[in-house]
Length: 136
Image (cartoon, rainbow, N blue to C red):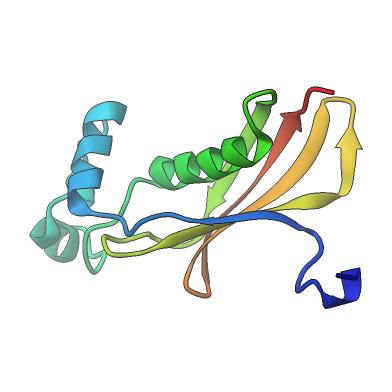
């Protein structure tokens, strides 16, 4: 297959995660020690916080991005740096799809630079970048 027939030749990987659940959010609250009610209490998230409903922890979204990246990189590599910016909320029932692409200038002194995007449907919910060190 030629580069002209690949939908986006810059994409290195894409992974869809199972739909986010409220149970998952409660478990993540315990793991992260973030018990803010916006992550599990529907009435509070709507009435008090004005969020339109429960939202996932931003760091959970970043963790999904890191998981997809680490799976792609493989066990002989490591993630040297990972950062992200949250652009829209993720809610229970959402299927988060993470993709990674080579940065415009992918090689730097630290390793391979990757641009990460997390989407729910066509809506971007987080953007980030990472540096991966791959073994020879």
